[in-house]
Image 1 (cartoon, rainbow, N blue to C red):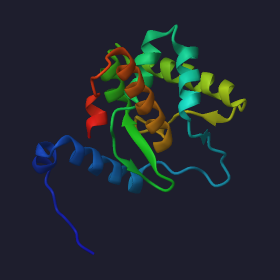
Image 2: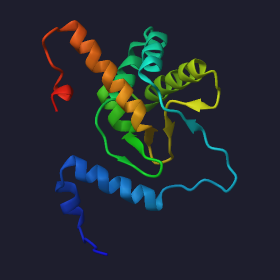
Image 3: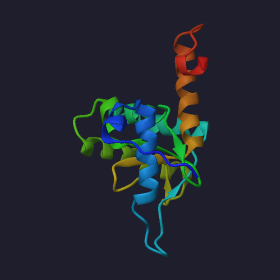
Length: 166
């Protein structure tokens, strides 16, 4: 086993992906634990067809659409089973929302619409923790990203989206 010692300045000066990875590692070790026997919301993978249906259901709420596509932003996947985790503050900033309450309203709308699509009130598109993170399954993120690429390709024939060029 190898250990690494970092001081606060080194962490602050580290690239954003490294800081995010460190934050996630600390969250895994120190994060809140669920009480034994507590039932957790059930994250369900969203297929591309479900993502298209979900987009149609939330289309009347432009802020929710911004948040939805913000979840396609690449982040680190970790845990067992793996989840993709976003900081709520980052999602709020990317969607241009004035406060976290607005973001949570958008995420709640997305979760409710997804549960309706699944026909299961316990099905969750995303989940939150007490540390200010939102999690989705990697397959869900892939479905959102694929839909975004298809929309861009349809609107601008011959232009390859940056994420698709990778």
